[in-house]
Length: 120
Image (cartoon, rainbow, N blue to C red; front, top):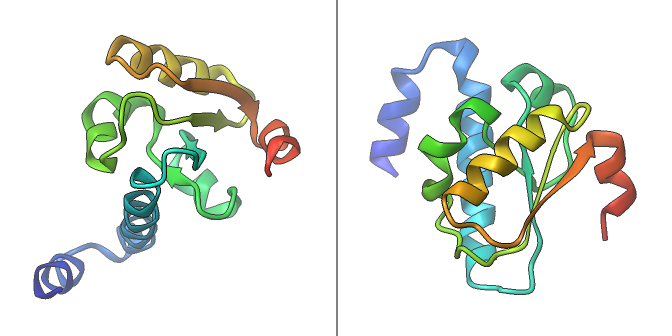
């Protein structure tokens, strides 16, 4: 906890919200990793878009950072991952990266409005 507090103290205010959201997402996904039937929602939009609106409990990794950060979530390669963005284009790019990395149960569900229709 001291490490996290130290990190947050040195973080620029504009990045604090994104950092807090990431920590919450990581905490949520850590609990999902032990529950194979749990669906993981992955928002691949920008920090600003995510801050404006997102599916509650979704993880957030901008699409251009997927290859660098997906392993941080600690997911099994067969975890069900539903990827969304604004229109589906960036989710498609992220999906291709996930598949290339060996994730076998990821789906591009399109935009945020499409994802909301699929929420359980």
